Image 1 (cartoon, rainbow, N blue to C red):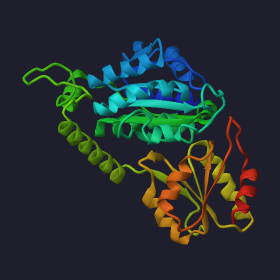
Image 2 (image 1 turned 180 degrees about the horizontal axis):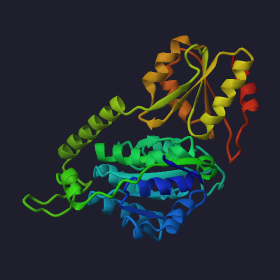
Image 3 (image 1 turned 180 degrees about the vertical axis):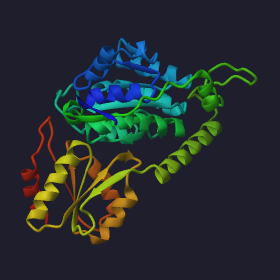
Image 4 (image 1 turned 90 degrees about the vertical axis):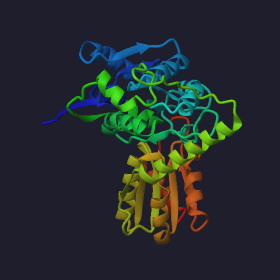
Amino acid sequence: MAEKILMKGNEAIAYGAIDCGCDGYFGYPITPQSEVMETLMKVQPWETTGMVVLQAESETASINMVYGGACCGKKVMTSSSSPGISLMCEGLSYIAGAELPCVVVNVMRGGPGLGTIQPSQGDYFQTVKGGGHGDYHPIVLAPASAQDMYDFVGEAFELAFKYRNPAIILGDGVIGQMMEKVELRPAKPRRTDEEIRALCDSWATIGNKGRHGNTITSLSLDPEVQERFNIKLQKKYAEIEANEVRYSTYMTDDAEYLIVAFGCMSRIGEKVVELAREEGIKLGLLRPITLYPFPKKEIDSLVPQLKNILSLELNAGQMVEDIRLVVNGRIPVNFYGRQGGMIPDPEEILEVFKKTM
């Protein structure tokens, strides 16, 4: 029987990394995600699996260490929180441009600037739309529980290697700090050198035995070559959008109204749905699990039965823009959110929702 342990979402990230066979974690402490590194230092996986755990001198250094490890076909990752992720954005663009697999965890806090250490979902635009320069997309998973934080590490690595693309776990300070039971699964061993060669030999810098050497770069000074590469990237993103959408629904079969929410707000949204149903209001909820790719078709399929949609976010209104693009003016799309670390309660949201009916 799988072991269940009470832990924070941040601690679950650390255990998820160890148990999925991660080769290296390179990070830098910042509230509210510092427990990721603290837990790794406490557990000391280098003594058991050989996993490298290193505190870099900065977020910029850590993302470049991730770049180097990914070049070698290793499962490498980092974690940070909003301002730290901003410092990593140049490296993320380089990683996307070099088509390297890696996992980045962002436990969001309030901004802009240094902002607050309280929770937020204000990094939706930065993460889903890329963050760094150029036309690229990371794959983005949005956990809504400590169990998700654990499970999504392995899932993110699978997607990252499948598409040779950075994958981001976009958590928030609520999910990172809250404590829940997490079911730990049997640990996977780290890949052997032979397994890495079998999987990554066509692109990784792991020695050129019997073949020409691989070169990893995001630079091309020939405009025709660079355009062909960008077209290739866009084809990859189209494939991701076609095959990797993940979402969940709650009481949407007969819904006349819909809440769309991710992360901690999706959990609050479920309670709002239950309160509304008690009053005879047919409200449902759709939770995007992947923010990129966004569940466009799934929202679109619900529009004919709906009177309006409420985007529920812990920011000033970001995901609501993507919902409005899907709906394209067919029904009203409203927004409600709190900022600065303030978290709304279900009754508050229900009263706001009623005013939109």
